Length: 438
Image 1 (cartoon, rainbow, N blue to C red):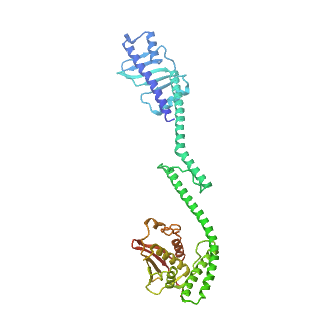
Image 2 (image 1 turned 135 degrees about the vertical axis):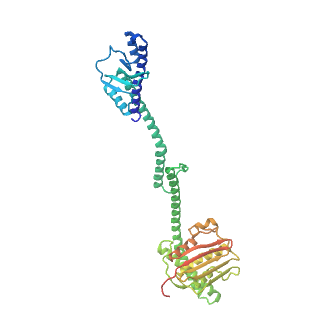
Image 3 (image 1 turned 180 degrees about the vertical axis):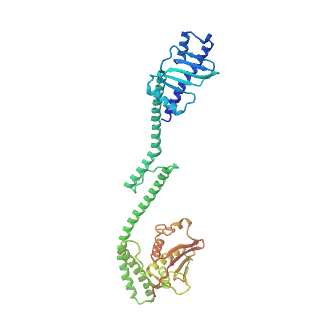
């Protein structure tokens, strides 16, 4: 409609303007004739060529008329085209279409001949109506064809740019919901810079991450079931070993007594761990049973469990600024220090050194540092150091540090990698003090 309305107004104005120009040309022939008179035959021919019924040209001194004898007695409408507005031209065009070409109209226009005050023509509107109706039909057909073509282009553009990618995203979501662990056909990442391309890329990344997590959880579930079965049988085996170690304690020999005490302690801890795991139905550690214990005794027991005091080619040192009594679960803290010291021992081998330093702050917080002289921890391993199954050592499971972290967090403390490099690695354990009376 924005195109049609001004176009029919312009078409009607041009149509009438052409007749006004032809009428002025016809008047030139009348001026050249003697007494401004021409024969009736020439007059009809001039009017027919101009497409009008009559022509009147008013000058300062006279008026020139063609078609005076055939001028109708009544004119249905008069239009002044000397200074028309667009709105008036549009309304006049609709008047022409509404009347159906049955009117005789008078049109006043701007004269081009010098010395002319006014130019008016009388014309039958039938020809104008037919031309305007034909033009309107052509515009309508063109508009329909343009709309169809544009609609097809818009449909194809929307289908290609919006519907197809959204349908692809929908299919991936539905397929992932039905079989989240199944690997779908690998489609290349969308390079679209808009929001749909971003959604496609993020969806694929999210599905890949969730799929990996589901696989890991399934693996852990299967592993947990296997560990539970092994743990049950291991408890029975350890019970037999505990009976044997009790029998060794009854042997009256200093060397046997020394070894048997360590053996009984290790077997007792293993049996307690197996029973706790089966009792809780999972590998998570139970809540710590805190009590006041000498930290030095726990550290010395860890060294004895690893057999470090008997090693002449390995150095183990413990230093505390004062005698420290720590409020913690001694068995769980023993596991934490045992995991850290065992890792330090295995990564160094012959000629290594482990130094354990302990201190207490004014608020009662205990700081325990375990330092070794090993080669350090690789850079790429550090972000996932305390995650399960991310061991930095060949053949390791990565469960030791993860277990140590969980136990320390259960005590309300913190374990961090304080320093690592070619000169060695230092882990720091912070355990809070407690207001309970000793």
